[in-house]
Length: 205
Length: 218
Image (tube, rainbow over all chains, first blue to last red):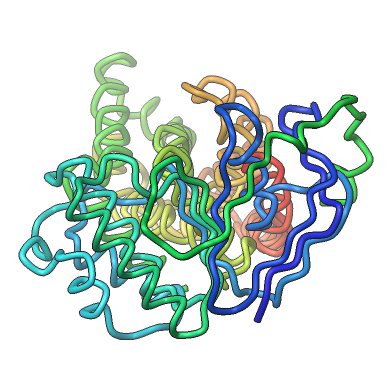
């Protein structure tokens, strides 16, 4: 299990933002992405998750191995915490959600409608979804937004457990998670020349 | 797939889910038309099939922008795109859920509302049959329209304009079947045409919807 990116370029809104990225993440390790706002971290992560086409280069991962989590968590306000998680567990074909509820201290909230949760609690629910997906590669975009210190510790523990179980993680974050992980600053890979992206878009369809 | 269907149905009947919106609109149309047209039962029974079909179609249109827009706003579509479920299956399920919460109640309610419009007794079976065959096409075409306009804030107007011309064949054959039935004529030809349209869009449009969704997501 690995995630290998070779000479990757990505574009947002028709303008190239990053180019020439090459890195490799092995099973059991995490890579932390750093860089200023607007440099293209989210775009890069979306391209790796398969949500948008890349301009050039290659992304080598096993098929159906990525769990993606970003700013919006796909939480349905009208459903309870348990129902939200059970839905994703059913979609990903995994059964038990109690481990995920425990990992993010959501058991006391399990029967509460998700609309009644605070921002940090919603975020915890969004991160718990990663656990029920049972996917080996986690691609996380600013996962710690609106989490308090305790919740960040829970998240770091969940990441460590995931890595120990042979998973790997690619995380864009600005805070120190206390992980023993490599850090990649994407700022030097800022695209110099905007490239026309029409061909890549057509290939994606 | 079953999980997605159950979730959509559950969301529809919870607070703010919009279940009953189409039904209420359908009721309003059929209650108000006799007031607008006047108490001429002859005239009413003549226009009843067309009014009922039009009411059902507009009631369907009313809830189209909910099919995908809510899932888009809270990020569910992104996550579904990463899930092992193919996008084609996801949009088909969403269309099915829309039909179960909007189209099917209209089909069931139509005979009762037809009473208000003095539909001749021979027209009831063809009316229900034509709605049963035609409303799935409305949901599937509507899902396609919703997929095209998914990234647009307040895209309801554009969605209606895009979808209306696609609804025309269904309306023509559906209303024609109901009208012929009410006059005691043979209804099989328009019903076959209606069934053909519905089968065609169910077979083809989910692929188109999934393709435009993939474009809209990025």
